[in-house]
Image 1: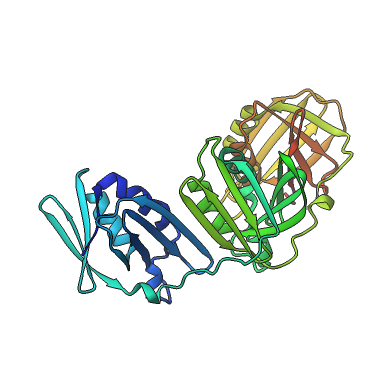
Image 2 (image 1 turned 90 degrees about the vertical axis):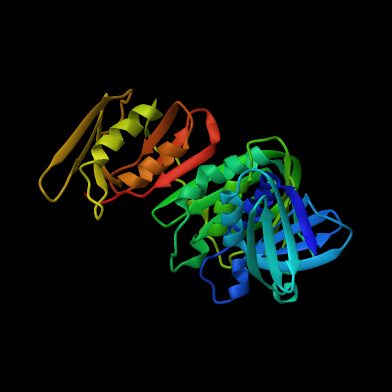
Amino acid sequence: MQLVKTQRDTLLRPLQIVSGIVERRHTLPILANILIRKSGQDVSFLSTDIEVQITTHAKVGVGGDVAATTVAARKLLDILRALPDDEVSLSLTNKRMTVQSGKSRFALQTLGAEEFPIVAQAEHYNATVTLPQKTLKHLFNMVHFSMAQQDIRYYLNGLLLVVEGKNVIAVATDGHRLAFCQVATEESFPKHEVIIPRKTILELQRLLEDTDEPVQLDIANNQVKLTFADIELISKLVEGKFPDYTRVVPRGYKNSFTMGREQLLRALQRTAIMTSDKFKGVRCVLSPGSMKISSTNADQEEAVEEIEIDYGGDSVDIGFNVSYLLDVLNNLKTDSITLSLGDANSSALITVPDNADFKYVVMPMRI
């Protein structure tokens, strides 16, 4: 039975959308597959890793039949990428899928669609928020780098999304630094807080586009659903209590100055050359009118950068993990940043001049 007949690129796009979450090694072999369901012309492509599920649709079906099967996602994707941009057909015979294009033909094993574990949708959603895709993508881009990776405090391995009043807030922390970003919405919402897993956030950054097209977020107690373009993504949420970010962000620092983001980024990149993989510490010495950044390593090698700054506050001698500073400076796209400091034992605060929507807190480090 013929399932699909279309141009290679038309079939490649939905497969690329859903195959990002497919794991190569899995305890359940069927999770390496994607579920293909056909009803007349409409064909849906679905993948899941039990935690996250992505579905997309394309009008590429042939005939009026209804059919469903699962096939290895990576193999099908690799075959299509290797084929020339020509007409491709997928057909199903005796539990084998045939991929044909011109004089190329591939036969793939399939597994029954009835065995595929589909994530059950929440019966009730507590809140629904609609934002432009580029706004949500911006929100994730500004904080994602601060998420923890495989931390024993599992609630840090994700991003806190807060809907409150007319604000949508994203917060991420790994215990050493914290990033906060908020955007305004037209509607007003009661307060809801959810922790979205790290993998889901990284996948959404790949799928969301810089357009004004809407994305709808449906928030439930244990699940979030995002619908945009022809994509539906359902993700489980991380259970646990996220740290109170309002207490982490320092207030009332008197030692504050504004400088060029690019200038500080380049100076830190050069200083980082002399740090080692095990010890990423750089020392920042602030005095009126100047900032000295230095690093040394086990071989007694040294890097020193001096920058003139518009600063008249106290002298401060403080150390940082240079990676944490580079992460934020690389992700910000502004010309200037404002750096606020307390003393050598207090967190530093990086903000954007005349913009209260972004805050980045980084803990000091003993040098």
